[in-house]
Length: 136
Image 1 (cartoon, rainbow, N blue to C red):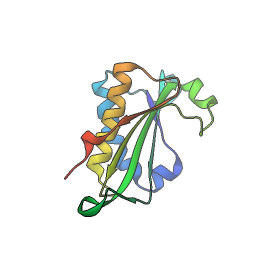
Image 2 (cartoon, rainbow, N blue to C red):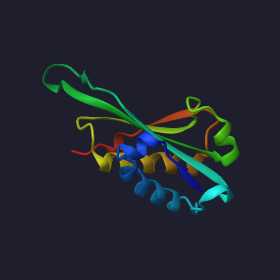
Image 3 (cartoon, rainbow, N blue to C red):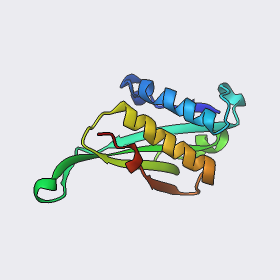
C-alpha cells in the first residue's frame, strides 16, 4: 500500500499524529507498505472536528467536540479517479471533551482499519461508533 495525504494535512502537522498509528493498524491488518506506482492499494486518511456543542441537560451538561477519522482505500487507479468529496470507506466518530487528543486520533484510526479488515471497504461511507476511544 501507499498512503496519500494532502498538503494541508502535512503542513498542519497532522501527518505526524496519523502516520504512525495508521501504518501500525495497516500492519496488524496484514498489509505491507510499498511506495510508488507499484503499490496495490492507496490509503487515504481524512479527519474532521467540529467547533463543539453542549450535550446533555442539568449537571450532566457538557461541551463536547465531534471528531471523525475516515479511512478510504482502493486500487491506486480507482483512488486517483475518485473525486475528493466522493470518499467512501469507514469513518470512526467520537464525541469528546478534548478537541485535540492524539491518543484518541490513534484509536479512531485503529477502529476504522480494523473494521475494514473485518468487513472490507464499503461501497459507500460507513460510520462506526468510536466511543471506545474516549479517554478520561
